Image (cartoon, rainbow, N blue to C red; front, side, top):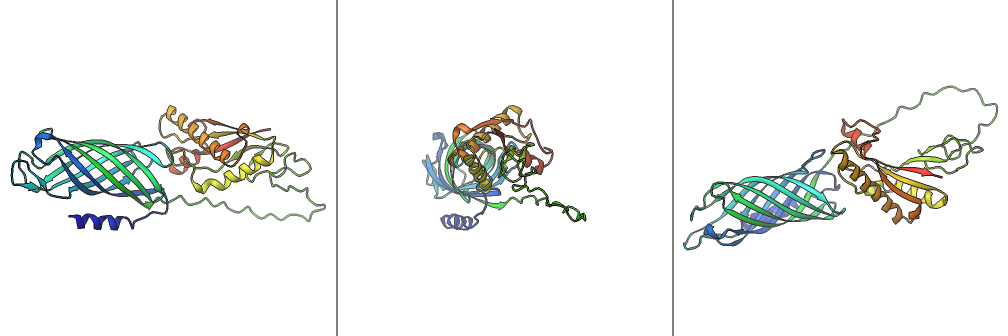
Length: 340
């Protein structure tokens, strides 16, 4: 049995993912079982096993877990010369609660079946229910440590077992991203030869240099009639129910931070938004966490804290439909509202 478990772990550790946005999670586990005193079994014995998690998106449940646990050594029956091995196969629903970008708590509830190699002392094959809680620590994008405790209640006699497990979670199956929208090129219109040189717009904000009171505008920022920025999309697209900024969105934040530092008079309100998944109250709090997360990123880039404030609008100001995954992704955004 030990050789089988070790081989399983070795195979699983090769299935590393290159992205934290994944469909599945495989977790080799080791731990033990503390049995109720009236079961006539060893009070404490070691277990090993494997579980496969199916991550759920746009759902209240974060993961569906399928797995098995097997006693590593023979488990003795007290008062007899008999022993047994115990196999448990289970299915659980898992909900995760993010504490920081690396640490989260999770709860689980589910059911399964336990099988005894040798039935004795009233211990028989049967169905059990279970519930539990654990901690997950993300070591890297492709590896996390998990520890949980599970209470098993056997259906026929109400027998109790307490399981404690340490797992090594390895994600795989990267989620495909929507294809980028390619804009059709503007039709080529023949123009008459210019009589005089056209007025110059150096920063491309639509306001000519002679009228532009705010040169060097960031690309794709909205400006007023004199070329000063009014709204900047920071191009941060959060995952559902998350407030952590991924490294892939840092370029726009750095550009915005440099612009704020180069213009001492500028101030900004960092406004964050959510899609419509979840309650109004929850989405309001989530948007406030996203705004605060962005402000902290700007502070880390040496932007004066007195120049930036955070606010959240929840799901109240969508820019796209919430009926599609792409539309909901656009609505999970952060914008900077500029103040002169």
